[in-house]
Length: 99
Picture (cartoon, rainbow, N blue to C red):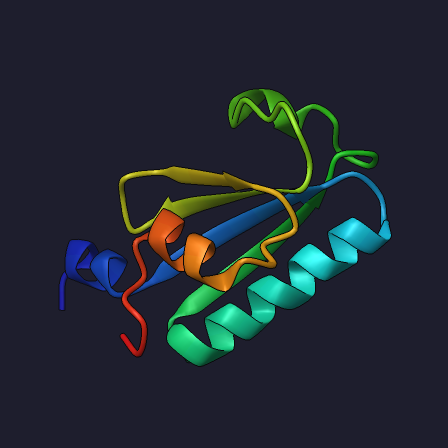
C-alpha cells in the first residue's frame, strides 16, 4: 500500500482548544465518540491547547475555539464548536456513517 493510499484511509484530526473548559472537554469527548464509532482504528487526534502554544493558531488560521481541523485525508476541513451535533460533524468531515 502506498502512502497516498494509506492517507485516504487514515484520518488525522487536530482539535484546537483554549484551556480545559467545559466546552473544550465536551468537544474532545464528542470527537472521541464519533471517531470510535465511525473511524475505529484509523484515526489520530491531536489536541492543541492555544494557551500553551498560541503560535500554532496562525498556521491553521484559528479564529475561534474549539475548532476541529481534518488534516487527512485531504482536503482540509474545519468545524467550529463543541461537536455535539454528530450529524453536522459527520457531514462537515465527510464521514459516511458506518464507514
